[in-house]
Length: 74
Image 1 (cartoon, rainbow, N blue to C red):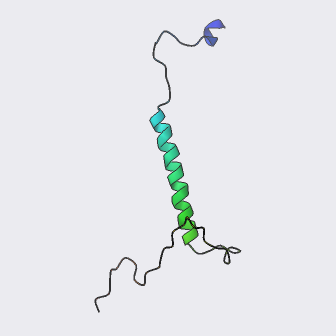
Image 2 (image 1 turned 90 degrees about the vertical axis):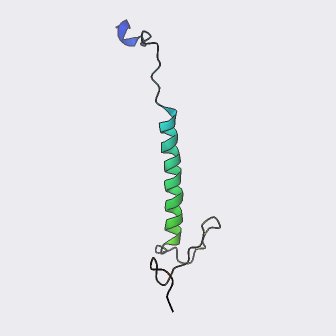
Image 3 (image 1 turned 30 degrees about the vertical axis):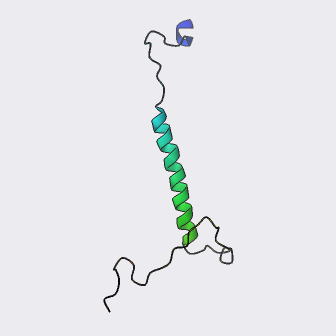
């Protein structure tokens, strides 16, 4: 039973989860929440939120008449 409870010390190297993987997941989660929040605030308001003001941190995105096509020639 003692062999099962002893930590392995013969290998010499500690097996730790790489910190870089954790940082990538944390930064990715924060970026996804931030981008998703901006997209949600710039989309059509859900029922009950039509009269609410836009937070100051969310940029205003203007709609284009011809999105993705470019400027009219005339």
